[in-house]
Image 1 (cartoon, rainbow, N blue to C red):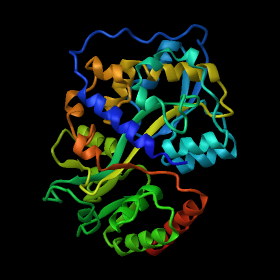
Image 2 (tube, helix red, strand yellow):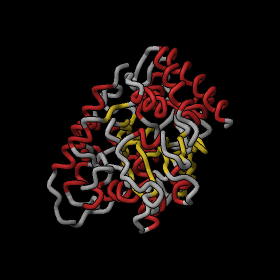
Image 3 (cartoon, rainbow, N blue to C red):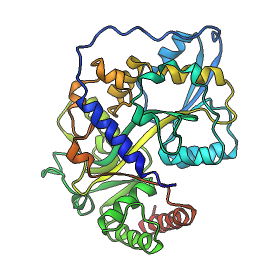
Image 4 (tube, one colour):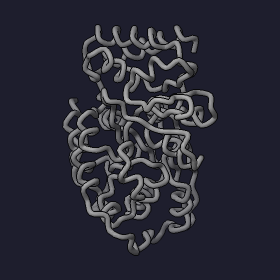
Length: 364
């Protein structure tokens, strides 16, 4: 399925967020849990560094429930587990292409919108995706970009190009995300980042191998931690992860760049997998994270953009983040962004084989 229209939907909504008047923070009525859940349990399966510190405890306190919160570091690992048979997770947070696969493979339960009154707060353009046009199976959670996180003390020139990453004389971290790595390699060789040509995949593989001398690690979902510890000078990472180490260090040692050549944009969606043990409580949780204050807390903590228009309109988003091009990209930057699409089984298999060969060459 061609998901390119979603790019423009996401970017249009992003523009609306940036242009929305930011009001002074006002009182927001707290979320109230529906009755009848006291004493129950929910199992949540989410990315690392993709939730606020108070989100789960806030939900547990509001509903009088307990929770188990587990992490995964790639869509592939989550997909593998759900395909093998959901062990009991009530909530998962797939990225866009993984959501498409989950829908096609009938691994998600349809949502009951009557149990989700906070849907009204989500920007319409983000809510209505081409592969789930009526939000039957998932709702937007966060969105963002992937680019270059770097240590400004070791990379003294501002980073403006992917060339600086691939040719940096010091250590860099790649990411264990073959779709994203190949998308940038394809961009660098002048090919469509979402090509369906096998020859392009081969050429992108050759590009990555030829530019791998400085790659000391292929990180899971923790390239930002390697950067923070000084183990690498630059990391291929998602914007929110890099901004989190910037917030944590309260220093000026790190920066995030969206290179001039462009980069990918992605979204996280919240959904209920087939085999969930507590579907009603899962609906309550989804409604909870769409509450303007809860959504704003998650966005402000993770430094990923929110799809919650009401949170923006009420001035609940950190103004420093709202005005940062690396978090909420400007019109000029948004024009260079693209979605990393699912490219069909043939290309996906070729890419996986090529990625395995690259890791063997690198000794990973």
